Length: 461
Image 1: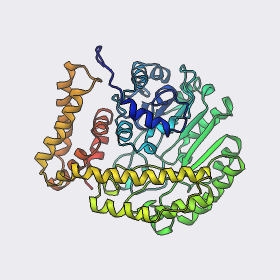
Image 2 (image 1 turned 30 degrees about the horizontal axis):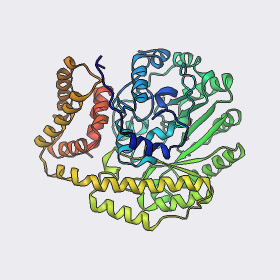
Image 3 (image 1 turned 90 degrees about the horizontal axis):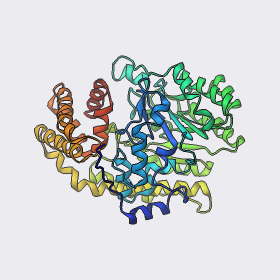
Image 4 (image 1 turned 60 degrees about the horizontal axis):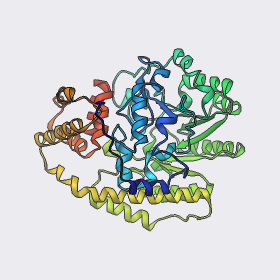
């Protein structure tokens, strides 16, 4: 960042509106994540949250965990948030706040975290491997080793996490109130068990949140659940065997439902909330009202995750007429929500937020659908113009480096584009110019050449 950096805060009016609906009305800052959270991705990237992919705190094993937490980028992001400036990689949340779809803002997920002692994070988020027994249609090889093997036909990824990583974690553990584990499938990732055992030994009160696909329920899983302070959430995208098994390739719906009952009973016995994580997509939008009804009846909290990638499974890039059809259907089929039930109230908020989000996508179509009429040369020109504009206006890079960086990113992309036929190239480019440019740049900046290539090839499907 340049020395003459000037903060550009969000409008006070928008911040005031957003603060009214936040999960914690006592929040002192726009986002708690930089002050309380640290996240580890399968590639070794160290982030403050699962939304800011651009401004990394560090990369394991190149950087020590304590140095990442106390490093320059951490300080920059904290100061930016204190000044209500979301330009240091927080563009995803910034866009949603500006669209006034406040319930969908990613920062909401960090509102309840304590930040009273900034010397240490109070929450760590782990995505340490891609071992998984499923090949979900909206997933990729970075999150499923089977997809990497069978769909992408590439050599396995090798996550960098080892015993030294656990050693470096130890000083953090006493300060934690919560840890989160995603995958892959967390119950199939060996290092997770070592970390759970270490947390149970050092800080047994720490809340261990695991997001599982609900298909793994071995004796080993049951044993660790009995000794740790676990909070289980499941991810599922269908309420019928037909849709569930179409999306969750390799899964058996009856096994999932049986395991769901076990995890639900476990949560009730521990007096823990239970969450169903749902990804609205092209294959399941018509089942969304029924999923909400099921969860309302079982008193299960629903959490929605927006799929932006891969584009062939996403809702956001459907034609305007299709989005209008989905929006009308969801309004017409709205489930029964009991307003005085806390779980129902939260689920209603997510349901209404989804409808509003679809409405925003419909409004955006007027700006983006003309991209479908451009040829590959015109699309490339548009993409490179967006990249150039973002970097030129960014305060993350020194002015002397910006021209070189634009050239570097352009060359990096062109090498991949040269491998593609014209039809695939047009598909990929159309996706890229209508997608969040900050996330595109984060992918170029922080992914290996091979991972970036795989992302772009997948965008062309």
